[in-house]
Image (cartoon, rainbow, N blue to C red; front, side):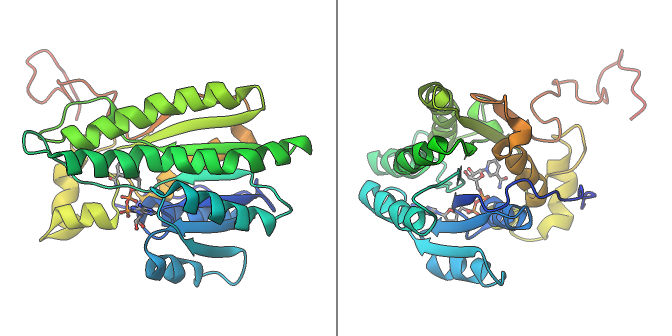
Length: 278
Ligand SMILES: NC(=O)c1ccc[n+]([C@@H]2O[C@H](COP(=O)([O-])OP(=O)(O)OC[C@H]3O[C@@H](n4cnc5c(N)ncnc54)[C@H](O)[C@@H]3O)[C@@H](O)[C@H]2O)c1
C-alpha cells in the first residue's frame, strides 16, 4: 500500500553528501530524496553495477565510487577524493549499508565478524573518514550532519536474530557516542530506526507472493496497518540531515508506523476490555 508523499522542499542545495549503501533500497531512496533537495550526492557501495544504475538515473550531481566500508583505508581515500572535488568539504553522510545475516545458536566467529565489520565497524569507518572534511565545512559555518540507519531490531527480541539485532543495538549506542564527540563542533549525529520497509532485501524474505501477499501479514505489526516505503524513510533521513533538525542530535528516530509503540494488546482484538473500533 503506497502512502501519499509530502511535497519536497530544497533544503540542502549544494551540500556534498555521501550515501553509503546508496545502490539499493533505503539508500537508493535517500539518494533520490537528497538529489531532489539540491544536494551533490555520491554513492559509496560495494555493488558498483547497482551504484552506476542508480547514479545514471540523474542528469547531474549524483556519482558513485565502489567502496567496501569494512576497509578503513578505502573509505578514507574515497572520502578524500569526493571532498577534494567539493572544496575539501563534506556536509552530510548517511550510513545505510547492511549485512542481513541472522544467526543464533548456529553463529560462528565468521558470522559475528561479518555482521559487526559491515554493520558497525563499516559505519564507524565512514564517520571517521568524513569527520576532518566536516570540520573544514564548519570553519565556514556550513551545516554538517550524519545519519546512521539502525532498526527497530535495535531494542526488541526477534526469533534467531542474535547477530543482526546485536549490530543494530550497537549502531544506536555508537550513534549517541558519536553525537557527543562531535557536538562541540556542531556536527549533528542521529540514528533512524525503520521497521519493515519494502526493499529488495525484504522482497527476498517475502519469496513467493510478493508485497501483495505479505503486506497484510507484516502490516499487522504496525499501528498504521502497513509496512513502510523507502521514500518515507528517506524523507525522515532528509529531515534529520537538514537544518530543520538543527537542534536534534544523539537521537534515534523511530520511522516505523507505530511498530515500537504498540502494546501486546495491539488494537484490542483479543482483549475482553478493549472496546476497540478497529
Ligand atoms: N528494509 C528494511 O525493512 C529495514 C528495516 C530496518 C532497518 N533497515 C536498515 O536499513 C539499511 C538499508 O537496508 P535496505 O533494506 O535498504 O538494504 P539493501 O540491501 O537494499 O541495501 C544495502 C546496500 O548496502 C550495500 N553494502 C553491503 N555491504 C557493503 C559493504 N561492505 N560496503 C559497501 N556497501 C555495502 C549493498 O550492496 C546494498 O546496496 C540497513 O542498515 C538495514 O539494516 C532496513
